[in-house]
Amino acid sequence: NAGVTQTPKFQVLKTGQSMTLQCAQDMNHNSMYWYRQDPGMGLRLIYYSASEGTTDKGEVPNGYNVSRLNKREFSLRLESAAPSQTSVYFCASREGRDSTDTQYFGPGTRLTVL
Amino acid sequence: GQQLNQSPQSMFIQEGEDVSMNCTSSSIFNTWLWYKQDPGEGPVLLIALYKAGELTSNGRLTAQFGITRKDSFLNISASIPSDVGIYFCAGRGAGGTSYGKLTFGQGTILTVHP
Image (cartoon, rainbow over the protein chains, first blue to last red):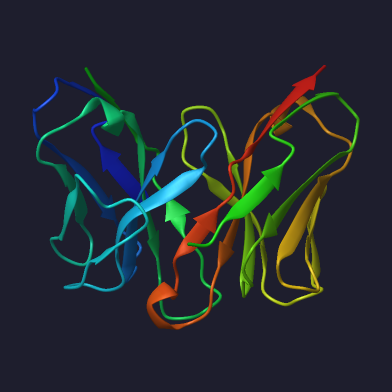
């Protein structure tokens, strides 16, 4: 039982390049989330998927797209990377059946855009 | 949107000392969560609080859900070197489109000197 896994762990892009960050969970959770973490700003929600087949914008969605490929996988895509997207990206999942269940986080992807 | 103010931003303490940090919100939350993040890792849940006034302990950690539902604090007693990390508070609102989504504080960086 690996929990939440993310690939890659590190990535360097040039401005304008595109890439997809992968996330998978093996806990049979319904909800999945993408956050970015910047110094002094905590974690900010980019997009989330309350259940398979649905996605919604979070606090900072501009410049990103997401795909909930199936119940296990939730990917984040940067179509044209910008230096402002240099950050650490975390994926999280939550069972989503009860108001008391909580989010479990992956180890993060450290992205640098030059 | 909802905002959480977490303080202090950083703390430098001696091993054995007690630590206290808190979060305040401009909005009411139904759930307060406290996470710890070790270097290079994703946040890990420490304590979850679900009722106003609730006081919950997890080993040397104690957290409380404020009566107004707009604040929470975390205490760590008799700190040890492995307590080093970033501590985040997070709040979750009620129902509707915000169901399950978390708002994070900016984090408290804790350094423990042996």
